[in-house]
Image (cartoon, rainbow, N blue to C red; front, side):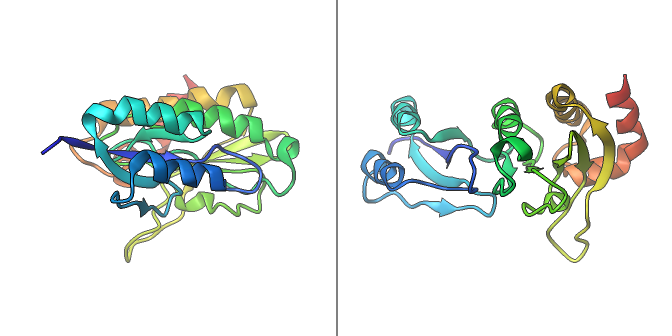
Length: 207
């Protein structure tokens, strides 16, 4: 029996939200075959098992169709973005695309969901994500520690406001790396924040 590996497929960050074209869905069916089961995740990725020896070839064909392919499991997920209803430029589509390329697929102690909202309406529910970026007119605010599941569900807290565009990726990457270095075993990001404290993370990104 061939060894398999689970991959995560998603469309590019775009105006309109999580949109697959018919051509892309057809490509998925043709490349993977009729017997592969596809899981639709709540964070906009499609999970599927593929033969390990064919992973590179499958990835190449899917990417040629305009899809993004990342590892599944204990990694940072593809950016969960809003629909950019205020327009690509005003809502910061290019910023979201850059952030997505930087963060998607990084190995972590537990899966991390990172969100983006192009305005304070927050239609992508940024306060329910582990880390979120919200565009506030000409600057950005970063929130951390959202928890959507369980009886102890909670909203994310503001980590820093007034962030400039060029600061976003370094700050988010610093949070991910610090979590990777200091998490205890399979410690969820929310519990990690509670242990190290919001104030310590604010000091981290200020240095």
